[in-house]
Image (cartoon, rainbow, N blue to C red; front, side, top):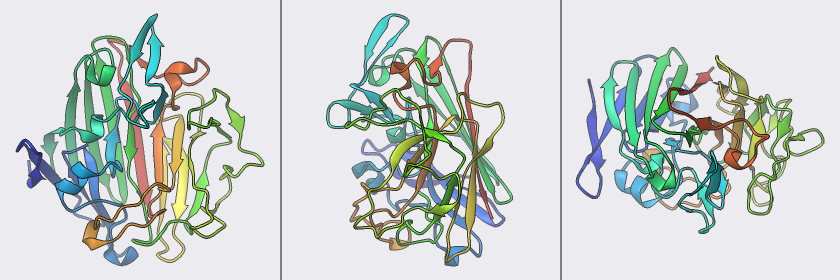
Length: 336
């Protein structure tokens, strides 16, 4: 197993790094958050990174943008941090305005130092144990994350099992910029979703599933992410409905292309939901990869997931995981 020291946690625990890929595509993964720290494609975007990331562990520890991390135990938002499961009410930690549970809480999976179980030339496998009561969730959950490179495709296989009923929804949270810098508002985007989950004033789904037709959320045909300059762009942060339930094999979810670099990427996933977030809240003075400054709208997140706040909406796709069953998500990023 080939790993190197990326840095240390505040308690002195080592944060390890694994670099995979010896062809066109190369990826750096760190144990903190099981995060994609760097991703590059030979000959593309002048050799610049195609994801946002940091060069030091301190920046990951001091800032909470979820750069490249696996978020969970439940990705996205849970209203009030509360849900009822089998007649029992559970209260989770609320890390967004003190009223909303976001991406697993203040000490969610993105903030944990995962164990690198195995690493090879083109893959790395990580694991994490989330104990019963973690952030308020019931049941102990064992999670596995495997990154694998095959040519110009990066696949992420996420699995989880539990010893008691709980809720699980994991999501990879990379910020992509296929130009290697600047903002992503000129990227052309297509998403295979004809519906979305409308939000209330607190960014919580209302429970409705609505058509994207005649809305700004209609990306069924390729178009630029924004038609207006950054100072007038309202931004996106919502869940688009790809399907009513997870699938056994990945299906195409989205395609983005960069007009200047000529690079494109397809997202394939088994998940029914895809969170579209164009980093409208990204205001970060810290230098990123290669010393780059990341502006607002500097990266595009396409997060495969179960629907946000699913435990509180019976009409949404089921996010309950029970003992003896396996949560499984397979997501692929295919570059061309």
